[in-house]
Length: 199
Image (cartoon, rainbow, N blue to C red; front, side, top):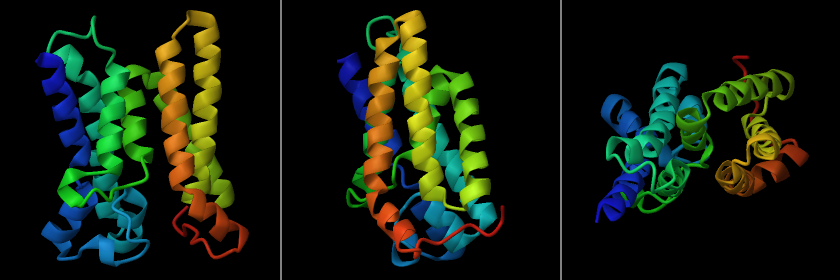
């Protein structure tokens, strides 16, 4: 019963469409009708601006963090792995019940899951992402590169500590990110992918 409740709560947390809420409440804009049409932070930055985009990315990160901490809140973190619950939140973010099951690309919420479980990895990935973004100017490419680095980090940690759940979940999260950015790769190749101008 408790496990079922935790899974449902994690999915519902992940399903909260931060970009849609911020856009409609404060700007009267449905971001699904602008830019890439995506509900994630990147389209929020492009459509609503840096201030709103920053709010959305923080909210999306916190969804993953809070969901991953649910087993601890309920006192069952010894019997159900928090990363699995975080994974459910990411699925909710990608397929949100509150937004017609069409959500974001899993980057920020995945980062939030890692923030709750391995804060050092989260910090490392933020640095990798920002360096890549500074060089390439492509958010999508930087997100995928961060995903690859996450797998490398998790593999090394697993070899040292035997933390197999981290490796499995990180591979899953990175796969989500890369797969959902597959069309961006084509646009980068064709030089039609938008570049960031503020970094």
